[in-house]
View 1: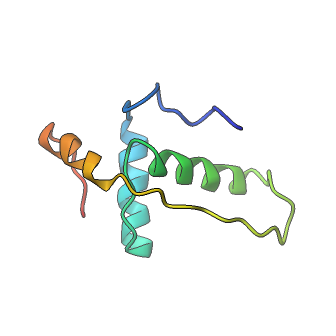
View 2: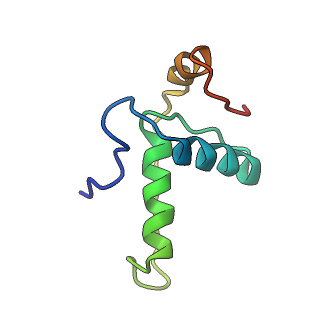
Length: 82
């Protein structure tokens, strides 16, 4: 378990996470929730860029849902493009 990608804790976000989430959606048409899966995918991308995993590794990412939580962020003015 790697705890470096919590962005301040449960339901805490930072602009970098929102930017990543929107960029990820633009690239893959896959929405991520800001509470869990966006943080996990952000961490995964960061670790891949840092060569944390051996080359040719097979990585399984499980999208656990939770997209309804994004509505609360949108109601607070957070700009998500999906």
